[in-house]
Image (cartoon, rainbow, N blue to C red):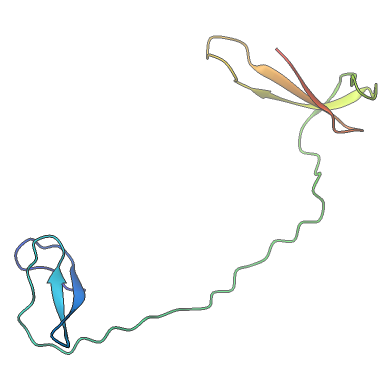
Length: 106
């Protein structure tokens, strides 16, 4: 990496008169040194570890006794979300264990 002598910004390779020189995009300064500039692209094939999803519906939420309005099942998952101002109570969301119906209580 090379830097501009005037403003110390990074120099970028630029074609000028069939030659490649280093030029500054900030102040327009062009390197007067005749250097062999070799531009190469390096790409690596990085293999990422794959994560296998075994089950989409992993039971991580707590279960409570709450009756579902849709199927009348007596168990539901629940979680709390602050949907309004901080000085007001949070909203309780429920999701039926049996039919996955979701509802909320304020």
